[in-house]
Every structure is written in C-alpha cells, then in structure tokens.
Length: 187
Image 1 (cartoon, rainbow, N blue to C red):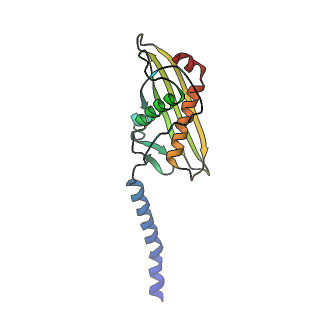
Image 2 (image 1 turned 30 degrees about the horizontal axis):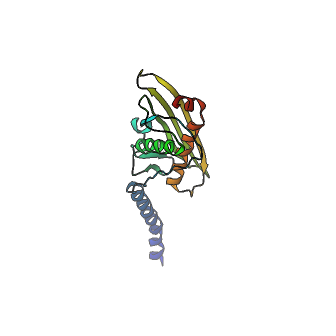
Image 3 (image 1 turned 90 degrees about the horizontal axis):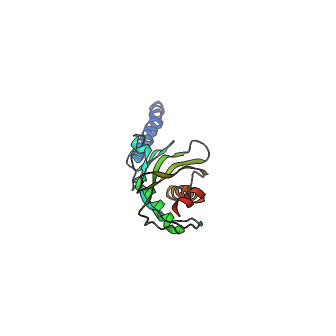
C-alpha cells in the first residue's frame, strides 16, 4: 500500500509536465492562421487614389515577426500572410468595394500600422488597431493628407480570430471613409 501511495506522488507532477510540454509544443509549432479579407462596408464613396504599401511598425521594431500580431496570453498569433501586405490588400479591396477608383496617377495612399494587438487577460478580448494614413501628391512630393485612426473593440474569447481581424480592419478603414478631409483629398 505504501508503494502505491508513493507512486501517486509522481503522477500529478508527471501529468503536469506532460501537459505543459504539449501546450508548449502546440504554441511553438502552431500552424499559421489563414487570412482572407472580404469587404463589408455599407458606406459609399467616390474619388480616386492609388494604394502603396503600409508599414507594419511592430515588426520593424522587432516586437513581432511580419506575420504576427501580439497577443497577451497566447504569445504572438501567426498568420499565413504578412500583416503589412494583408492590410494594404484589405485597404485596396475595401476602397474599391465602396466606389473609390484605384487608378490615380498623382495621389498615392500609404501609411503605417503603428499598433495591432490583442489583450485577452480579462474576461473579454480587447482588440486595438492604430493606423496612420498618408496621401502624397506625386507631382510635388507633398503630403496632402494625414490622419491617425484608432479602432478598439471588445470581443468574446470564443470569437473566430480571422473574422475578428477582418472586422477590426474594416472598422478602421470605415473611420478613414467617414473623414471629410480624406474624401475631399481624393476628389
């Protein structure tokens, strides 16, 4: 009986170590989450602009890799596309969807994704996306529009990551489309 009791002492720590090993392996070897953007704005706009790339500053500073978004509890979420490319493509898709022509030879829209993170240390998940949009006149080299849009949203911990990411991007672009100075600049 004494021998059985002593073997149980090692059962819990062994099970805990095994579980920790499985979780660590899962987190390190996680497959990248596939991304696909579908436009969804109900806004309408007119005008024209060309789209250039958006810089993803968290990856340029080394906080995350280009295909990651910082997450407080799970570490950095990994996606199958770099965030800067995905965001630039989403801006193009959404602007075209609402009616903006993307063929302007004199005005080019670019920007910087300053912050994109998920804080899920509380009961909900807090998403934050901060983007500075710039329009440059290619003839003069002058920046003719600049504005920073911050989108914050609470979501359930059970939300689909790809859907929530798309929603955050769409909401941020909609903030741009609501801005009268932006609409005036592209018309």
